[in-house]
Length: 345
Image (tube, helix red, strand yellow):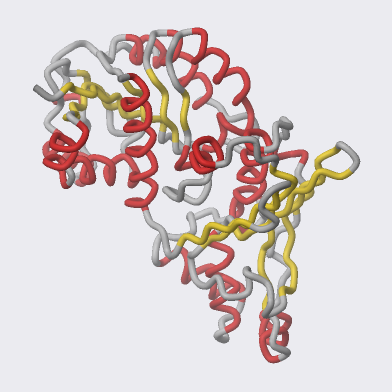
């Protein structure tokens, strides 16, 4: 008999819905190859209600209700506590999937959600960058004390295996620094300007296809890139670094004229993320830069992302992710759960 992984979804937006579709699509493979089946016992949303059902929530109905803008409350078989920490404690879950909106300032309320899960003996898996940037040490220590795990592969470059690659396949390697393109929205906006759009038109296009938010400031002012740099430095370079400590300049003042002239000169503008250890200190930045054709960043197009690590044993090790979406982020969540289940054997 397959074991059951019971899931509490914190947030039911694009990523959580993609996760539901992913585990349904891979249901037979997950049972056959991993001996596991998934059951969604709790879902909490910001505007569409909450539901708890220890026997499993009907996800088809949940998806339909959400699509119609209706509340999920009708799917609950138990009274749902108003207090979110109590809701998590009574979710009947083995795993909390934290997919609520990110807070660049302090990581809340996602930090509170993950802390509550771990304190109640529930593994925490997150696509939310805030808790990693602001509370990784605390939450990892709490998880260890409870015999649980806090994993977060989907927080940087969606489902690309960055954290797990370092954790699992680079023993005794020291990461000295990295460079990359970590914000797909700004990469697309700059490319649209290369093709003739003004900055405002490029932003409108990114919004029209769902890449940019109604308020795109988190992307174009560099906050999304900065919090990803913060997460990478904190976890992989062993130096706690808040997003506010990253030197940050966005693309708001980058003109289409500059972008198009660089392209004519055989160069390209990119919003480049960097971190290096210099004299024992971490120097980290996010800023528009002109890159040359010889740079691995030059050919990264559209919504693709890249990170190139510099280590003491491998001078340059890169990961490129092409045109990700909610499905790739959902895969990162699934991979984290499977890693936890594998290590529980």
